[in-house]
Image (cartoon, rainbow, N blue to C red; front, side, top):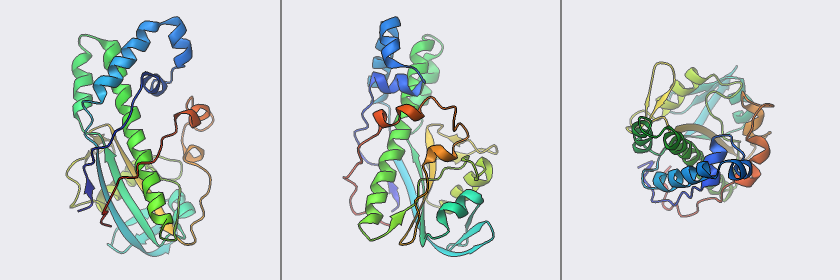
Length: 244
């Protein structure tokens, strides 16, 4: 069944938490050691609250018309970004990653008594779900590469050229029937909030163009871009017997 509930070691450090807060960990260490301690406690507590789940489905591409990619399951993906990166795909992998709702519930409860810890815990969750998504994308890239296929960059609804609400609806339609973990609001927001939706194209003729940062609405004014290499993750390799 294309739902993974892995026991993965998603390591989170105080530096990761501060990074997710768009803070300079070195500067914070000099100016406010207390906040570093808060970040450390939040990172440790977050590890007890993460319930990683990955819902995914691989669907063959049926045809392309104008700015719409039609899939064999009678669903479709649309927009300039989709056509730019997936026009040569023979299959697309649609997935949602989530760490569950326990962490955000805890962060909300702590907001009444310790706003600093609440914010740090929420930031730890944001880092954790991005880490999970990066691990999963790198694993599937290797999975397809070993089968002689290239992969596109990971595409997320809300990137330039793929509007958030239509994109989220398209993702959830593809995963309908196997997704009981994450719900979608009328505005396109997911619950649990610490969730990420992704589409990855694969095929022998895929052209991998640019990076996710190039298509982000914060491109050119993002704190994280110059620090991304320092916070890159190692791919998870212990996914076995994946059913596509």
